[in-house]
Image (cartoon, rainbow, N blue to C red; front, side, top):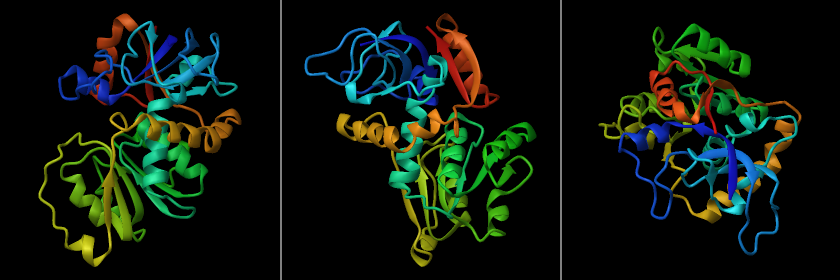
Length: 292
């Protein structure tokens, strides 16, 4: 049990509020998939944490509250040098990016990587991690300000999707090896065209819809792969394995300040509706948090 100081706001929270993303059986019906605070109680058999420890945690739900319960193995220590506010923004985004880009997508050193929505919480995290681990990073964003943020984080080329066609731009680079996409809709076919031979597309959301007509001939002739995942329904063991990998592979870089969460705005818990409006407006850059 964690006495929360801050909770992160994520796109699934807004979908749940709209009735489009039901919590799994047994989870809290309150939104909130990540947070940071102080351990206030532990269950039988928990040895790695003690009451009073500061942690950030992936939550099954219930983050928009003073207290939240989660599996002990889904908690991580606050990286030295980061505040509770910053740490509350780590779990949902870092679990999602690391598992999909590196474990599922198998991004390698020197490979070309594209993330859509580069200025979002997912995007800013993906750019930093991919750049950190030696990939060539590309991103899409919807304004010059957002494009500049992506460049500052390590993107080699940022495509303003309002004035450029991303698949045409990437063709001049020979296509990319891996794409992380949360847009869906007509982007799916366009993503296939933007991939290099043997490229991989990892789908993590469908903001423009999941049902599309596709020409999959390219998938066979150019040996493309389409995969994807969603974090919340995965088993406790699967999430614990991601947490363990993050602690080993990523947390040391947070401590050394080589990467950091990009912060957009803070709202009081009583202003959660305004926080959702901010996210749904698409104007935010990085993470939105609720102060509990």
